Image (cartoon, rainbow, N blue to C red):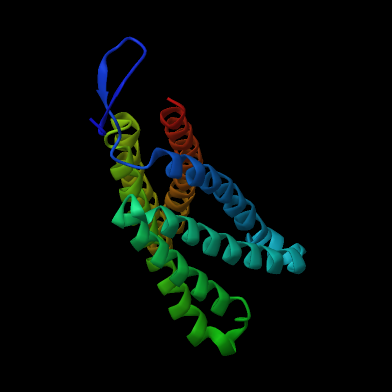
Length: 213
């Protein structure tokens, strides 16, 4: 009977197969780290880099620190899904590449910057994929609706990313159409980022509710 519990109405219900207390604690911290990531992205934007180089450098450091912290938390909760472990490894790889890119500047470092940036994008996308797979798995028995929302979010994420890539290619041939595609896809990526914050918050709330019951 360890897998079952009795609610207040006396009905026997199946308990989640995951450690809800562990997930409630650490997904709550993930929520705040995503906020930190957004701040780091703002500090490393082109507008900031041109006007305030010191803030740009601080943003790079903050971004690497956030990735390492995020990876550590994913590793901690990997006991609940193997996908989290894979996502954590990708986070650590992306963080290392981020450290390599911090001092890189100028044409002399072009041969270093391009491969490192490309690998960073690949490892980052792979990490997002495994993280979302992990969220889907741990939520499957707890909140199937939210689990399905994570699945759809991945589709939107990859769609927005491919849109930005396609727009960059098209802009070489048809600048106006390419720029419009990049703009629309960038807005889509912003929406995906906001939804990720919301979904992680909801995850933490769901697991806290199960832990308290």
